[in-house]
Length: 137
Image (cartoon, rainbow, N blue to C red):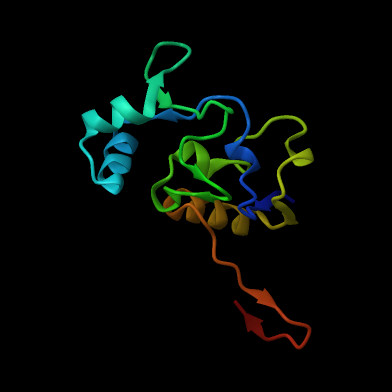
């Protein structure tokens, strides 16, 4: 059975070293969300990727994501796909030591449904079943 990790929005992943690669579509979406032109977004929030094959988000001097605002992602509703996919579609050995996502054993169909929902919305809505057998949000 696959393990699905439910993000707790601990923001640990926003503080790790690395790069968040951006597509042209993500740049357009982020710029629109910020209410600025794509050119202005690129100038203020991106840098050349290490492989020189595109753009990545800038980091703050302390290494955290430029869009991390305290304990919140200031672009949560339009965050890049790379961010949406972690830790279910990509991760690295030992990520569980820092990331507070809750592991949950799920069936293949539920895993596929949850991943599809993450790709589409960036979050999941869960329905838990109480001890009486009734569903709740």
